[in-house]
Structures are given as structure tokens and as C-alpha cells.
Image (cartoon, rainbow, N blue to C red):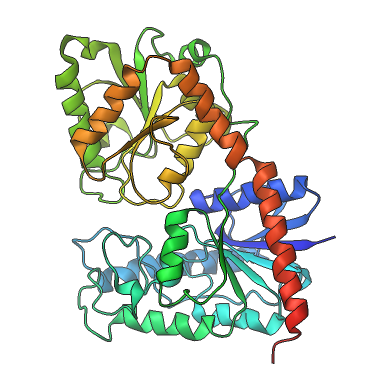
Amino acid sequence: MLKVVHINTYDGNGGAGRACLRLNRGLIAAGIDSKVVVHYKFGKNPSILTFNTNIIQKAFTAATIIAERVLAKRELNPSKRTPFSFTWFGRSVIRHPDVKAADVIHLHWINHSFLNPAHLAELAKLNKPIVWTFHDSNAFTGGCHVRYTCDHFLRECGHCPLLKNPDANDVSRKIWAQKDNAYKQLNINVVAPSSWMLDSVLKSSLMHDKPAVQIPNTLETDIFRPMDKAEAKRKLGLPDDKFIFLTGFMPSRKDLHKGASYLMESLELLKTRLGAKADSVELVVFGNRDAKNVPEFPFTTKFLGTINDDEKLANCYAAADAFLIPSLEDNLPYTVMESLSCGTPVVAFTTGGIPNMVEHGYNGYLAEYRSSESFADGMDWVIHHPDRNTLQQQSRQTVMEKFSERVIAQKHLQLYKRVLGKTQEEGPHV
């Protein structure tokens, strides 16, 4: 039986962690011996393994994760709020029994004091093919996770706008060089969940010569499924006679990555357009901020806080008439896929991998990038859509055809067989 070990920093914490666990579930259902081993384990799921074998190791791991965040403040420009990972800390994983026994090593998100370039290069000693799913841009940059308009990843980084003291040989340039040295030693096969990510990989100075393929993430279509909308609204205490917009994590207006300011502006524009009919619209917000720390919305708003239960989250999507995601850069955001899987259309900017999921006019609306006016057009469009039932059916159909566990597991299985065949043909690395 084919043995695959998935390596990730956390056990389902964040989009990458969830993608890892969902793929693992799909592969197991397809008859693969698939296991997940993580750097730091938050939950108690016994099937998820960890590199920490005792409480002392776990405490040390937590300390290095915290230390990296604290020390990073000395290097980063405080006016920038873009995620950036350094390579000061790391750990070796090559002696773990499941890593040694695996036929294929599948990497996911490996930051936060986990697999720095030096420890990544150690994997070459195992002479196994490495599949690496890129959940953001960090693997092929000098440290940033989100690039926006920066094109330094096309060269050798340096002069990083996120650093306090950028110059030609700054920290980003040094990290780039560390990664370049590590990657030259490794048999890496890149998985890009979106066409946007694949295009970025093929253009990058670090990864352009590595084999890369586009395979989307997956999700539990049996959990994230359409439900009776009236019943779903009733469970959340929402009025059945109002149009419900749902949106996720609500950051401050200063958080560029999530586009909060554009959402606020577009909602204000929509209220003006609707006039007296604005009372027929209500907004629902879920995420890890409470009602005291969010802006004042122009519509009646219900705050649900953090939702850790997928069944409840699915109920939220099913209750909504449309999902709003104003993100300015995202690989293949799960909130979009989850919403569509529940039969709820999406309004989003045309950015990142979102167009791989949202087909304009078919299962949602793709607004012009960074245009609040266009985003408001999208909300207006879905409110006045003449056939919402068809829109909902097409949303669900998109996920079942392109992103279901069975479909994505088979695509990965084909990739694993291909990279194993190449390894056997090439023989052992010298």
C-alpha cells in the first residue's frame, strides 16, 4: 500500500492545516496509507501525530514559535502588516518513523520555527520524492507570505519593503539564498492549488525549474452541503424575510490583506442605492473578533464570533443568501469553497485563486479589483437575481465537479504515482 506522510506546522489551525487534514481524509477514503505529523498540536485527535514526544518538547516548540514573533518586531517595518517568516529556528524531522517509512513526503505549511531551509535540505538524505503544496507565497520569496504588487520574488529578493532597514543584502536576500541552496538539493514537486499560484511559481526565481502542477484543495462536501434556507435562518435567529449577507473574519480597516475598508465602502454604497429598501438586508459576521472591535456597519449586523464547529459553520453558509469576501490576495480561500458547497453564491474581487472557484455570473460575482463600486455592483446583482434557486444549485455543482474529496484524492494519487515512477527511473541520488 502506498504510504504518504503529510507534514504541517499545525493540526487544522488555519487554511493550510485544514487543507492538509481534508486531503488526508480523502486519501484514506481512497485506500491510501496517509498520515499527518505536525510541529505543534493544539487538538486531541489521536490520528494526528506530532514531532513532540513529551511536554518538554512541546513547551520548547511553543517557546520558539513565540520567540520568532517577538524577535521579528526588531526587523519588520511596523507600518506594514504583511505576514513574514524568518529562519532563525527549526527542527529536524528525518528521524521520525513515519517520515522514514513513507513512500512520499508531502509538505504543506512549514513556517513558525519549523522547517527552515537547513532542516528542509536534510530531507534529501532520505532519497524520497517530496510533494509540496503551496498555501501561500512564502516558499518562493525571501520571507513574505503575501506579495501584493512586489515583484522581488522574480529575482533574488533584497530591498524588501517590509523590513526596517532594506538594502541589497538585507534579511530577505539572505533567506532567499538559504532557500536557493536547500532547493537545489531536493527532489521537489510543487502543487499549486490555483492557477494564480501556479503562474507565480513558474515565474519565481526559486521554483521556476521545479515540476509543478495545479491541484485544488478539497473539503468535506457531506458537511458543507445545502440545507433548507428557512430552517438554517431559524437556527441562527435570522429573519426569513430579509436578504442575508454573510462575511468572515472582520479585521480592522488597516488590515490590507483582507480588504476590510473596501467592504465597508461597498456596503455604504449599497445602502445608498437601496434607499428605503435597505431595511430588507441584514449582515452576519463570523470570525475571531467580537462586536466591540469591529467598525459600525451601515446595515443591521449580527456577530457570531469564532465558530469552531463545521456543522454550525455550514449552517451559517446555508442560511446566507450570498457570501462576501473582499480579500485582496488569496490562494484558494476555503471560505469561498465552503460557501459554494453549501449552495451559497459568492461576491469577491477578481484576485488570486478566487476566479478558479467563482465563475462570474454563474455561481457568483467577480468584482473589479480594489473597486468598492464594482463590489457594490456584485451585491446589487445577487440581491436582484431573477433565479436564486438556479444560482444556488450551480454553486453546489461547481464544488462537486471540481473540488470534492474523491476528485482531489484521485488527482493527488496520480501525482504520487508519477513522482515515484520518476524516482525509480532516476535511481538513487548521489
